[in-house]
Length: 289
Image 1: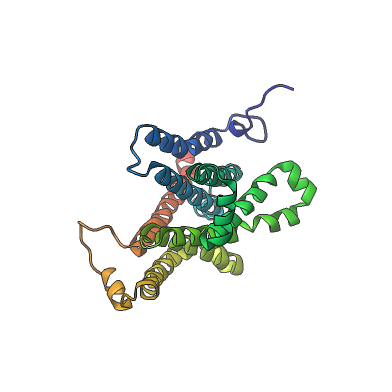
Image 2: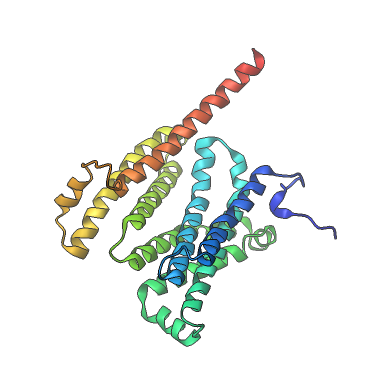
């Protein structure tokens, strides 16, 4: 049987530039982390930092796979579906590498690692998410879709929503006091889930996805701000009013608060989608002019 570079071709056997580009880009974070580790750029605790970086990219790839459906609708770009499976499998590969780096850090002590996973709840949550990603990766082929049936396969792969939530919780608990990026991730997860829920529940929403996405961007940012305030109140007894007020202060010397980052990212997606839709509408006019 001749070799066929499946990640680089579409179902018709033609070269697929989008798939090829995504396939190459999926390797970049791992290679970059390996390079930084080899060059001593990961600080005084390089093993911890490498494990942390690979873990963050796992979550980012989970989110990218979750973002494919909304982006396909907003951007009117059906070809994005061709890369969803690839991104999902990459999320599992990075999650597995995250666990292997933890093994290395624990000197390959299987008993110790197993006991840590059982006794530390944030590790238990992360391991459950890994098992879920493994199940999705193992059933991601066309052959498994035929074997399970499309309906059962779809139900199984909807578990990615729970996996995404578990991954965010794991990130929060692992980060302890520095929850800046986990809060941003949580806000983006809320936006992705709310968009799915609203569009699925409303025929009117399906006809105006840009308007829905814009409104949900504001809602998700507000929920991010509120969630941040509640977290600091519960964990460090910081008055909620103080955290809420911090979101109204702009200082170029300080990083923007997570709520503003969530709003900026989600609205940026809407703006890009609006520009693309404008181009798509003008294209037939230009062709007939």
